[in-house]
Amino acid sequence: MFTHFIFYLSILLISLCISSCTTHLYFVRHAEKRNSTDTTTLSLLGQKRANALSELLIHSSIDSIYCTKYIRTQQTAQPLAHAIHKPIIIYNLDSIREFSQKLVNQKGKNILVVGHSNTLPKLIQLIAGGKVEIQDNDFDNLFIVSIYRFLKTEIRLSQKTYGAFTP
Image 1 (tube, rainbow, N blue to C red):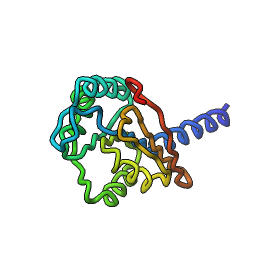
Image 2 (image 1 turned 90 degrees about the horizontal axis):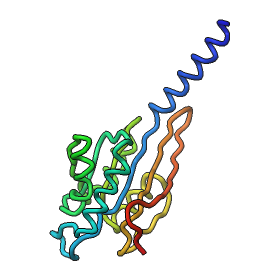
Image 3 (image 1 turned 60 degrees about the vertical axis):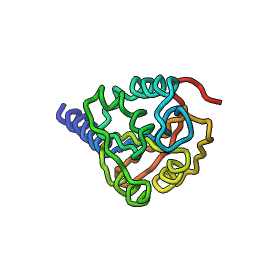
Image 4 (image 1 turned 180 degrees about the horizontal axis):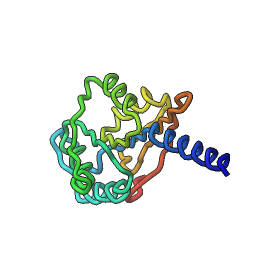
């Protein structure tokens, strides 16, 4: 009887340690924009995609939301930030290497990062080593980097889509 108790307690403790030592980083490009200017806002389709992102991640226990200084990235994250009562934190595109290290050093957290087609691939490669491409007309990809820390660190990159399909 006592042996079974110790066995199940060990399994529980290992499970808790693994889950608390796992970090999930969710990377998305900003949603569809009205035009190609730096100060543009999201289009109606982009607003719908931002809502789809919120619906997808609302139960993912997001701890932090990072966006660039551009309004289109912030508008992409806004529905989720509002729904989970989290602020949007601005990260600097000029210090991607430092930002990638900050993300890697977060232990047991779930983090959303909203960026751009030309910066997210670099950021993901710095963290996961995997090469990803985001085409100019591509807005539906969600890249997930999972960092498992137990005895050794293991990093996995996966990809899925959300919202309306983009060609």
